[in-house]
Amino acid sequence: MLPEYPESIRRAFARNVLRNSLLLRRGENLLVETWSGTQTWAESLVLEARILGARPMLVVEDESTYWRGVEEAPASHLGQVGSHEWAALKACDAHVYLWGPYDTTREEALPSSVQSRIMANDHEWFRLVQRSGIRSIRWDLGRTSEVWAHRYGVDLAKWRSELIEGATIDPRPMRRDGRHLAEKFRTAKSVHITHKNGTDLTLRLAGRRARVDDGVLDEDDVRAGNVVQVIPSGVTVVTVDERFADGTFISEGPGGVAFSENHNQIPLSGARWSFRNGKLTDYSFEQGESDFRKAYRAAGPGKERPGLISVGLNPSTTSIPLLFDQERGVISLTVGRNSEMGGHTRGPRFVAYSPIRKADLALDGTPVLRNGELVGVRD
Image 1 (cartoon, rainbow, N blue to C red):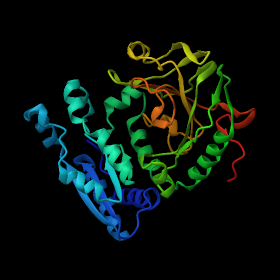
Image 2 (spheres, rainbow, N blue to C red):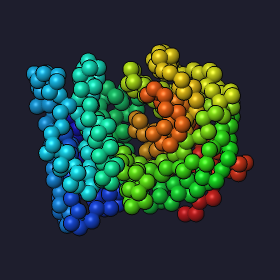
Image 3 (cartoon, rainbow, N blue to C red):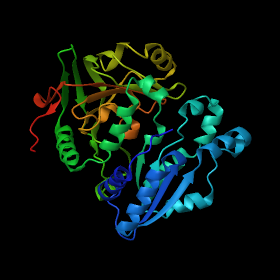
Image 4 (cartoon, rainbow, N blue to C red):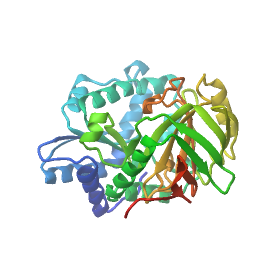
């Protein structure tokens, strides 16, 4: 179970999410969806929305009832979304999802056919939200557990603390820095990443627009279709030229994960990747190598291509699984599919990323990061 948190913390979180992330306005419709484990946080969101003059609606999924349904209902009845639920989503201007269920171990133990049935409408949900321009925030406190903390090599209490702190900071400095980096990426042709650990990697950019997740969903994001963000947020991401990569990338510090269709999430650490002629030619890991190898061999063409690079912007995060790339100054590199971000690799669902901390990054020979610190950004 989650620990109890003071109302003052929950209210501060709610105010920041509604006022600074969703930019919620008087008269707007807000849909809050939560699992029972995070209901008190959802109630704070409802209260703060009413104070703002917005019109909140709260939907609660009771975890114990959910698991009884999974056990007792026919599999064909799972994952069904009624027209009334779609109607509520279509009618809202903004949306907050406090993700669950809490019992992720039980969830992972379900047969793949049942998991697929439960998630069958995820793609339709994303299409509807994007098509309708609904500003949506997701927060993952309700997915934290000792099992996952051990798996990703982080301290559970610190993970939870950073989820809260990282979602309550002022996003304006991240927006400033993110846009500065995005402009640099837009005009640059080459990327050079170096580190005293032996990293020396050259990539090329393809003139594609960088995406900035700064924890704010404004009109520009809606027009660009970037309407869903996970908080804490804070990262600038750009896809690279998939045809070029040369050198070695050695991750530094904890973090990294591979996502594959048949192997779900594979925690990684201690990655060493070698590239030649635009392809990953050799790899090793201190953690996760066996599972990575299985997933990598099963994936199709494109798995070996560089996908994107990102630079983290959030000064409050260091220990959040799946969000290691948000940590300020961290450079992350991915291989595999990148079409969701505007790249050209559309192969099977295989993506792996690894972060490097305190590295140098130069664009067209001009330093942008030195030892993980941004260069040329005014305070």
